[in-house]
Length: 421
Ligand code: ASP
Ligand code: MG
Image (cartoon, rainbow, N blue to C red; front, side, top):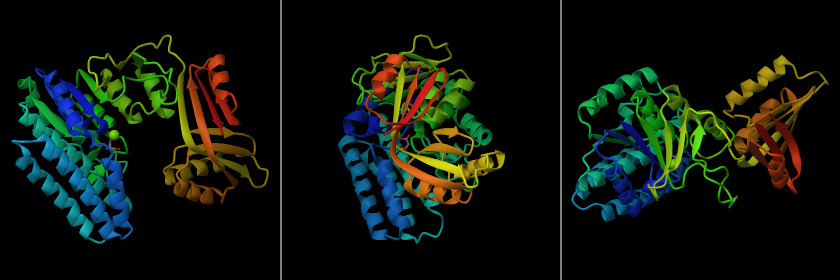
């Protein structure tokens, strides 16, 4: 059996959904599990709904939600004929679920409401796609992934309970073995707690869901369908000479994701590597292109891989009384990172001070800087960028550093990182 994952861009219009169906048609004859994200920018739009709701602006929240409803209704209307009414009934049920909630007063924490509202994006998109596949003669079973993926209640970044999820997925999908042409369709990015409260797995988490399914089902492969040719060595919008990498190791991809390459969600690789399941990054705009194959291999002759993260800050932390930055302050600092849910992109330590480079989420950084000032003298430097080059050469470093003001440089044998403005 194979697992396919289609992202938001592959379902954001009538044409794209038709295109998805044609890709599925070309791959029938084998059991298939299809994981789908919310359409286009729906998740961003839903985030605005929750923000308005939680800030007490109920009318605004409802008006914003109305726009999301209309987009989904319009797509369904243009896409579906015989299955329109059936789909409409299901969408209406989902809309009502959210509207009920929006009519309440927020009494719980923001992250809880975030997950109850935002999860609807994937439920809507999968209902529409499922109806369309059925209408075009591709029988499929729509599954509510919240009945299968059990998570903890760490809302917005929920952790999966592998034992319960595996048992449920295997029980539900065991029929696949006996029906070689069965197609299951379900949502990425979402799950549910033991109390049946919806959860989400972190932004862009659908890749991860697909990898979890592939792992549990011992899939032959996972294909992630994207709007790019495959994995490139740099962002082609910034580097017109970016090149496609046709084969990569799990290790290289996990490193790339860690440094901020927006190829694949960082959590995706582990479930695949653990069972040696190959990952294909394919282009839904032209399925005949070979894409990128990610599996166990020794990477040879990789080109320099360039990753740029903008919107960085550096916290300059200095001990107050000229004492060494020893175990105790370091331990407290790591506790603060976990308390504020931030992950440093780079840390440079010295005798009486250290520098920490982080993504700039202004509220989080503000709070982190404030609490860190109980231990250190703190200075915050903003509007920086972080350049990472894997497999760097002197030539590429010179080319990319020209005219930049370096704030911090770190290098290992494989990786060079520069914070600059
Ligand atoms: N729809 C979610 C997001 O936009 C999950 C995903 O696309 O993977 O973050
Ligand atoms: Mg997405």
